[in-house]
Image 1 (cartoon, one colour):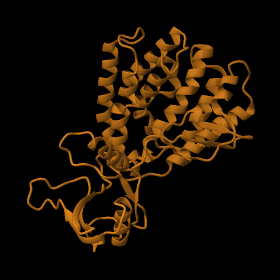
Image 2 (spheres, rainbow, N blue to C red; image 1 turned 60 degrees about the vertical axis):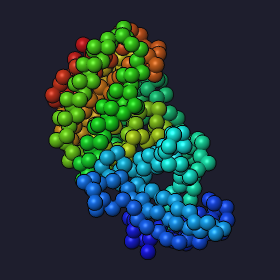
Image 3 (spheres, helix red, strand yellow; image 1 turned 180 degrees about the vertical axis):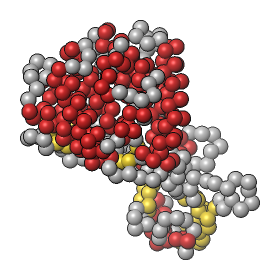
Image 4 (cartoon, helix red, strand yellow; image 1 turned 90 degrees about the vertical axis):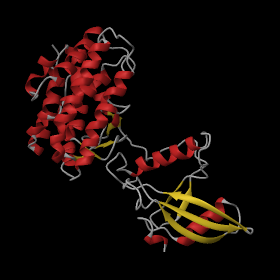
Length: 364
């Protein structure tokens, strides 16, 4: 049985039906054989299973190879990781001289049925419409208006929400290490954002960026001892990804970069935006923005008791500083704001234990 050859329940009749559709006609399955057992090789690990299917169509025999990918700790933990690799192999394999010609790319569903996605050219995500008002508009309003009780309650609710999300822990050290590795090297994260800056940027030289990256690599090795902190997270919890309706009723969207990670990722992402709006108004964390920031952080800490957070949050703050200091992402900041954001990133990376009560010192 094919079910015994690979690690997912694929049905033989499904494979036969799929091949009939793919090759436009009646076929007869002649045999199915697993490939790549590693019995006679020094290599003992692969990224998935392959199996050979031989079939007959119109009197001619033909063989094709099915390749699957398994969940592992090498950047393939999520279903979309594995889909990305197979989509690349299908697309790029067609344009390389002497490469085995890719015939299709598809998936097996939970019932073991095979389906093709070979005609895909652009992927899309369809979601329900989220009603409400973007949270950043609340923060923008406070540049000219005084804080009201509802603002305080909303900041408190966001702290409570993150505490609830982060309460789900997971014992998977490789996922935590991956999260930190991607924080440093992913194209959407620290090194990718730095590469988006112009060369010899007036507020941060190439040498200074290089020093930031070096310090972040040092943090990567420090954080390897904190794999016990792995928890569920949002991944991009900022005011443009939050909508409030009446009162404290809200929704989030655009969850990013994995299902599990470090709580400090979410905490710093919202925190840095309170800091940004306060910098734009006061030149430091002060006034109503400080009230919101403090109630958000205090609520989170009261719910989680997570004081260890301040031993690991530094590179996550640095990442978000690099985003909001970017002239591409935020082109209208005054020069002094960019200087203070870069000061924050540099100072926080040299701080062993962050003091949430001394945030303004990091801007200096």
